[in-house]
Amino acid sequence: MTSENFYLLAFVLGVLFSAVSFLGGRLHLPHAHFHNHARGGGGKGGLSPFNFGTVAAFLSWFGGTGYLLERYSNIWIYLGFFVSVMSGLGGAAVIFWFLVKIAAADVPLDPADYEMVGVLGRVASPIRPGGTGEMIYERNGARCAASARCEDGVEIPRDTEVVITRFEKGIAYVRRWDEITGERY
Image (tube, rainbow, N blue to C red):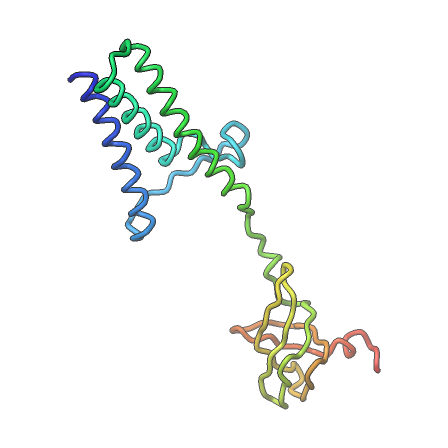
């Protein structure tokens, strides 16, 4: 195998890995998950610089640069190899930097952030006696809506502040805020 064929094979493998990665994500093809649980030495948040995307980028850039240098220049073979490796590392570094930027915004989910009991809200659509209305509440800076029923089965008019006492099958069971605090207006 000549060095030209070696570089061409590396390039083809890199492009093939990139295509498999892209199509696997777009078409939801079956795939394996590999997790790096080591913290501290692997980039931001345990992200390893040796992952499928960076390896594919390295092979593509390494192979493409090496092939072009072997095919169309009279550069010394070891210098060509060095330039190809540096090109491959540069391509892999760009992909790794992109992945780190994406992973920086990734935060683990906390079940307490989704606990509905105790959430304060306001009735948006009146709750009829024994019926269902709608309440608006704020969660993580976003305005959210939920179906609501009165815990006691009485009517609750629009714009009344309520507190969720339980949440079952997508329906919030609420009580008036002034009932809970003992305040009457």
